[in-house]
Amino acid sequence: MRKLTCMRMSAKMTILFSVIAACMIAVNSVLATLSEIRNILLYEEDNLNAMASKIVAAFEQNITVMGYALDGLKQDNDFMAALNTIYTLGEDMETTSEYHQAQNTLSAALFHEPLNDYFYRINVLTMDGFYLSSRYETIGLLENYSDELRTVMHRLPYLNERNRGLSQKTLVRPHIDPWFVARRISIYTLMSPAVYHGKQIGFVEVNALSTDLFDIFSSNDMAGFRATAYDADGRLFHRSFDDTIDYSAAEYGSMTECSDKNGDTYYVVKEHCSWLGFDIYAAQRTAVFESSIHSVILHHVLVSLLVLFIAEVFIILSSHQLSRSILRLTRKVSQLSDPAAIAERPLLPEEMPKVTNPRDVEMRELEDVFDKQVMELKTAMRNDAELRESNLRSRLNALQAQINPHFIYNTLNIISAKSMEAGNEDRHFLVHKFPLCFVTMLMNIFDLAYLFQLRLSFLQRFFLYYLYLFHLLLGNSLFLYLCLPFYIMI
Image 1 (cartoon, one colour):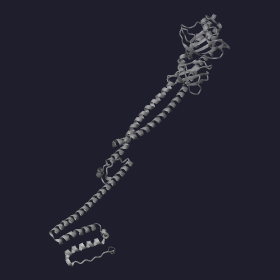
Image 2 (cartoon, one colour):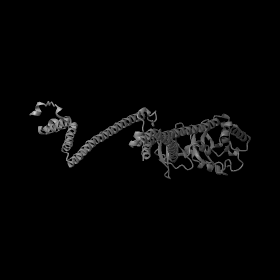
Image 3 (cartoon, rainbow, N blue to C red):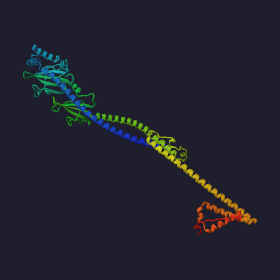
């Protein structure tokens, strides 16, 4: 029972400290988790903004390089003069040497310019149906001045008469290459009219593969990432394969939440490309963000459990260590509940064995006070025992003193009775009166004050008996002098 009580004390300390530690760890874990979630959200927004800025910069650089290639051809006088020669000679003069020389000039500019190697295809077209490309192919190409080629030129909206301008550059969104019919290849185009001496004679195109756009508008480091571009007229220029996000709620300078047709939500940031007038949207699925949050929460839960386990072990050991002195002192107090155990203890406090830890100052002081009280209790018990022994001895002596006079009294009565039977009157009178005198003396010995409370008649009888005894012993030679107080004679 004592052990159970002390274990309850240790258990209470363990439970109390465990609850406090668990609360502190839980609060710290929640605060750390919320802080990290906030940081993840800020990181998500910063990361999306950075990706949008990166896409805008890469896209502008790509279009700028395409523009450099386009301007390089248009600013080459020999190239433009050769293109004008072909346009002027036309289909009828295709076999002349002048026509072939102009065509060779165009081919040299298209095939030998190093900048052109970065692009899929650079095309030169005239208004009457001449076509020359920097990409040499043996099959699948449209023939010059053919009705098929003129039909393709007429169907292309960016080559339509109404859309033509003398200096305007047009960026065409990804489409199937119209000049190569053997395979379906997706390209995007930067086109500008070819103008010679103020007269439009044709078109110059710089074509790049659409896969280049996917490389620009994608990220291998961000799961669930989507990027989309809209031109200045709000028309879709490029988007990911499975991008069906509605970006109407997106705003500049802030991260907003948008949904696609499947109901999946995305965090979206909107960036503007001022040079091209494009709006770039960078998005990432919120499920990825939620997965990161779940990972953070799981990490903090595991860390909290580990810290709580370590704290629990420390609390158990500490509680046991703190309650050890209480346990020992409790056992010591319980052992002294028996008076026999108290009697076996040393008398001096400094000689009593100490059970508490000297480093537990309060418990040691409590034990010293307890030992002192034990000493005082033992001293009181010893004094009480001596007093009771003295009282018993006094009562025994009193009983013994009472036994001796009664024995003498009874003996004298027997002698008196025998003397009366033998006819010896003098002996009978002496022995008969002596016990009365002796008893009276014994009574007054035990209480001298009682002598002054007796009546005078009784005193007279006492003195008569007493004188008669001495008279029998001494005869007529007895002389007696009495001095009595005045208040007795009254």
